[in-house]
Image (cartoon, rainbow, N blue to C red; front, side):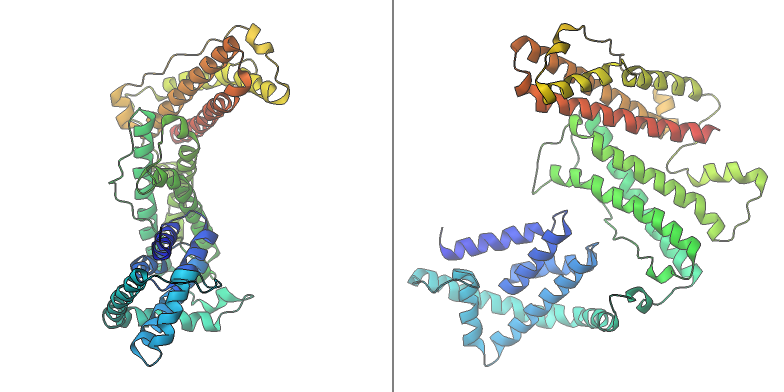
Length: 436
């Protein structure tokens, strides 16, 4: 690979890193791309500047876009030779690298690349910069007067109506993304694959700085941002399953991200419950329970009288209690794998396999009427599937006398089962509360 090819590969790599879940990695990539001066990064840096949830990453993207502006001015002005030399040093030697001999073919590529870069940068100047400059100037003006100690004081406080309207709009965006992600995870739990063509709003976190004069609204924003944070964490698994990563994502891996979805739904329910009071809508004592249920309608569907919800809750609760009890199948399996990890013991190989309950069948009409009950059933059945796999792995490892080699996969299935049952318990509690 030539020096120029290696540089172009590094540019592509850093553009991909702008999608990392680690803000430090994104910030470092944005900074590197600004200094590298490759125009291919401009579009992605603009997107990061507008949409990234981390303030420091947005500021770094802003700085990098300014670097492109300076580069364009240098190429178009009387410092073109110095800029060209600087780009050669970056592309072929690295910022701190030593001068090396350059083949003519490589120089030809450089000249062609610089010509294309100049054209793209001129386009950036005359088409994009004029639209972007007012936004960047406004951001810079705010940043210049901000201090580390009282940064929030420089953000103008908003009136209640504006805050509540913005929160409601943000709530809709977050809720839509959570529900779409929940549907994708349920598909995987059912043995399917994620649909990478699903549209997500991908909203940024809502800043509480402008609501500092309204403590009750700050509390609502805190719940809303908690839902947003859980959404972002859960969606990372979906992102890894889609291009450019395209990593396998199976039912065995749904437990943890589904737990984040459950927590997001719980936080959204808290926001729904608090908004009427924040708007000053009167809710008398006799209507309080009804109002609380209706505000959670998008998270917990109100059961119809014809459905035996309590019967489902009792049966599902018994399944979870059965496997999670002191001598339950999941508790014992986790203990056996822990023993293998700690001391390599195979004492469990001489014990019978506990009975694992069959999957729970929820009638379609009940599943459609109570989506969260359907989610709880999916989680429980998924946990039972992990449990069966875990016991099969343990038994096979005992017979083959290779418990140590099977430890990682077997213990992971046991942990996945635990996560699924715990998340299901949370959903069962949510449905139970909506019934009371």
